[in-house]
Image (cartoon, rainbow, N blue to C red; front, side):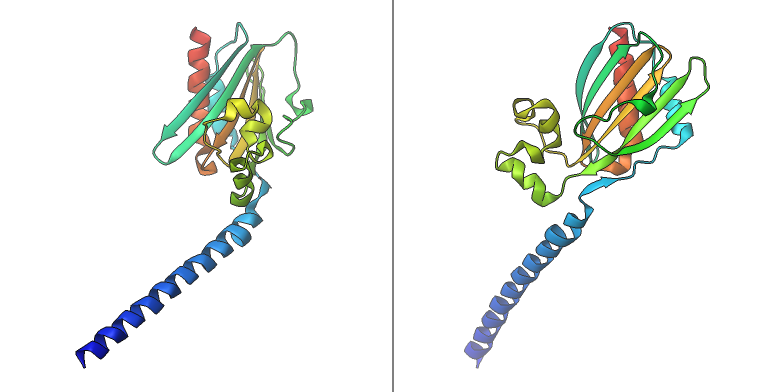
Amino acid sequence: MPKIIIYSWKRFFIYWSIGLVLLALVASYFYIDVYDKSKGGYFSVKVDQQTCLALADRLPTVNAAQNSEITYHKGLVKAIMVISIKPLTGPVDLQSKDAPRHLAAFGEYHKFDTVPPTQALFFDWYYTTIIDSWGWIGGTSDYNRYAVLYGEEAAAGKPNYRYNMCVIFAKGASEYSCDIYCNNPNHLDELLTAFTDEVVKMCKT
């Protein structure tokens, strides 16, 4: 009798384990190929005017063109941020500015009658699906937003963050842009603060 009971439990455990594996495979399929796939593409960026103006107030005057790239990692938020600043030779209208070649969807535009005049242009987030990101593992740069713009050599060894957006500020005779690649779009305010922090450092050098 004990042998029969032990055998039954072994058989139950085997079936239970197989069932769990099959359930995990089905769940993974629906998450990756159905739910995550439906999220791919552009979605709206939202930055309120008060936050936007507070960020702009921190931006110093630019005397010389500079470029910088920083890696941000705080808590669960990880990002690569490519920053460019330059002095302007004349007035600029950010609304007429062409979108970066890797971002086509215009998001939000803010204009403030401050002294000096301030503008902010935000391009919508772009999300690369899990399946599409696997193309980068296979060596196809089309599935890595960073590699699309900066090349495969520059992208080698860097995380392929699937969320990407761009922001441009114009304040007086200065322009500031930041290309953001991150793992979580819900912390945009935090990333924009890191962007302005880096701009302040750049203008001090």
